[in-house]
Length: 400
Ligand SMILES: CC(C)(COP(=O)(O)OP(=O)(O)OC[C@H]1O[C@@H](n2cnc3c(N)ncnc32)[C@H](O)[C@@H]1OP(=O)(O)O)[C@@H](O)C(=O)NCCC(=O)NCCS
View 1 (cartoon, rainbow, N blue to C red):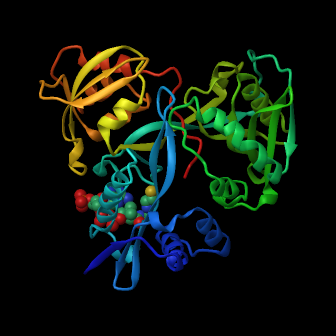
View 2: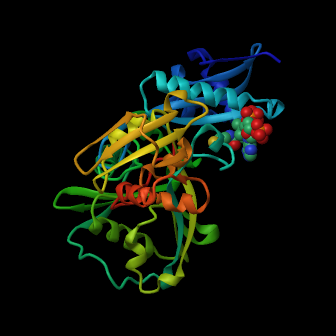
View 3: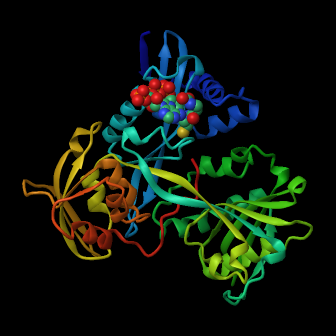
């Protein structure tokens, strides 16, 4: 079998979308073809061909990701990854994923990220869980709040075309303060508000905003599932605590339903601390965003650190050789530098393990307890935990 890897041409994009859809066990509908055509940048695809036949698909979206300290770092958002069921387990995905990383590096994007369908696929390529989300189910009858900010503003419905003009500003405000958030470009907004990502028609989806003093501080996008008597929140994004409380209250106040289900909630969503009966909140953790440090020393220098510190980190990376070696990180609240060094290492870890705590989702000591990191200088991992700690937990609102 001779496999050629190359980007698809514009005239091949429909075939690419059809192949991807088959890879997930569906035949592409016209709506799905429109969805793919809105989002896919043909020159960033990397497909696998056997002769003329498309047997593997992948792409990377042009994104920026907020990292601790607020920098927006260019990121390749890997997506649309499939290998045809006729061609699986022959190394085709490995070929695509390795080449994608090299192409992302050549473009000067130091990060790559993805939302995996299965968590066993991407660790071997240096990705690791780096921002979690939670699915929350709240029983409406037990959703009284004992604590919440006083509300001065109001909630109201908007149409999808109004939402298109309003939501991006709210999203941008959250993007600028929450690490793990990625940019959503115009095409992705058009797509998001078309109902397509949820496989729904626009008629089934509702948009509600919270306004205070003429400014929109938050929005929720949801649908009603009468068959299971629930309101399903697709996205609830708020730039203030007041908007957060108001929109949750709105959702829990919609009549004739038993439960409210919130998908991909931030792990530090304060609703838990507002409920009178928090035991009735069911929480299911999900490994949302996986991160790949494509250029590890570059991204280590781009974030800010909660505590001033100096560490020599030895990184192992079998796919991106430029990451291999020892690097001295000098970081603090005001800036950071990361340079190759010949000094002895304080700790050694794989590039994937380094990614897991990069945004602040977890302390490295947890990975040490899982026998994943080696400490060479006593106290190095404790210092690393203190340096990499963040006030807010990372969260990615956009499943690309
Ligand atoms: C996941 C998928 C792309 C893998 O493609 P593939 O070409 O078969 O993968 P490879 O042959 O390169 O496999 C590389 C390694 O990953 C492992 N692997 C691949 N898919 C895996 C999975 N779903 N679960 C666990 N391991 C997996 C293989 O066993 C192989 O391991 P080995 O080298 O130790 O034998 C393919 O199975 C697929 O299209 N699945 C359905 C769509 C999907 O889930 N896409 C991912 C979207 S995020």
